[in-house]
Length: 220
Image (tube, rainbow, N blue to C red; front, side, top):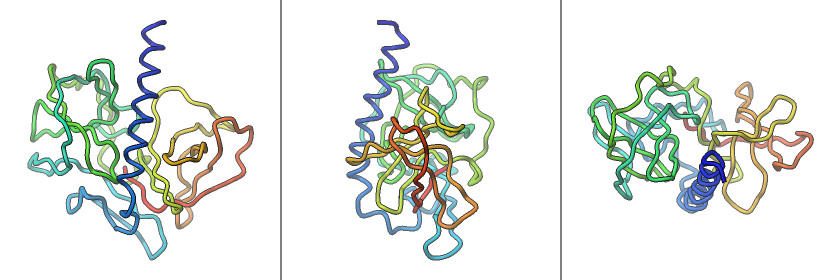
């Protein structure tokens, strides 16, 4: 088996574990207006029933850790995140396990935080064995205009953006995989022209996209 195939298998395994745990962690938080990243998140909603969008911030401006750290590991980041265009987001390795996104802070060097999902606001602290690959950094800011890397649907399911190769239908990529028993994923990006935002939903085996679902919360 090639190294590329092995890494692909590992990514799928890690994503599956993350979704299984985050689906449980997300229960009961659906009605809140901002994530537990809390007072340091930029959040916006226009009216009752509209989608609440927030910039996820695991660090404060001074470098204080805002998320709950479940474990601390040694590892490194070799490139920018594939799940969000933020300049502080990275794709990192602990052994053979890939974590993406992991976030850095200029006020706290040598560390990145890799949340399991924003609705749980918990994850892993990686103590870096090498410096961040700043020449490969993304160029996006910490902005609500970024495409979301995590979504919570009105029906309660939690979904995260998937890096790497997936399927596509009519120019829409299978972008988000969701927890729960449903095999359906989310295709393309949210339609922000309506409130609440909507997005196409269909199984990976679908040939056409005919169903949309509404989005309760979005994290950038």
